[in-house]
Image 1: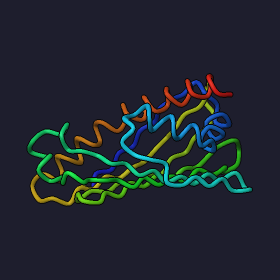
Image 2 (image 1 turned 180 degrees about the vertical axis):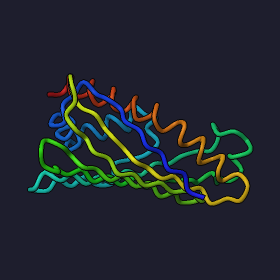
Image 3 (image 1 turned 120 degrees about the horizontal axis):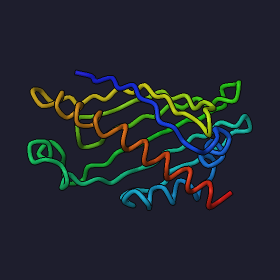
Image 4 (image 1 turned 120 degrees about the vertical axis):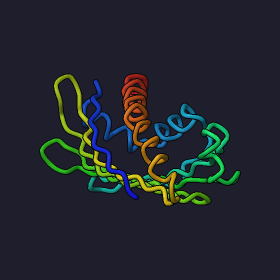
Length: 167
């Protein structure tokens, strides 16, 4: 079963500012430290065309999950997050985000478009989440979907603050 989630979050930072932040190693290191520090920046590549490719490795623990879900996750659970952001013309930036779990039966993929909006920018995203476990997979996907929008809002606020402090 696969769950599709569409959402949009606004930011006071401009498209250009966010794209610039994504190209900065310190942004990713600070972001990971701010959101739990359970991982590391594996790679960051900035292309001559303005494209930004980043790979983050997260070491996660199922301790905070409800017990019904935690039993599907081993103690050495880790997640590889890959992101690609590139200018798409007309002042927009297109992004692709992938999440691959190792040690658990889940994955996710998203396509995003960062566009100018009044007072900053808007991130529109279509994501799919899949958790391949009979009977509870749909519930896990629903839980992840419900958490995704607030998490992206928090990340957008963090990014705007980081930009204000580092530009």
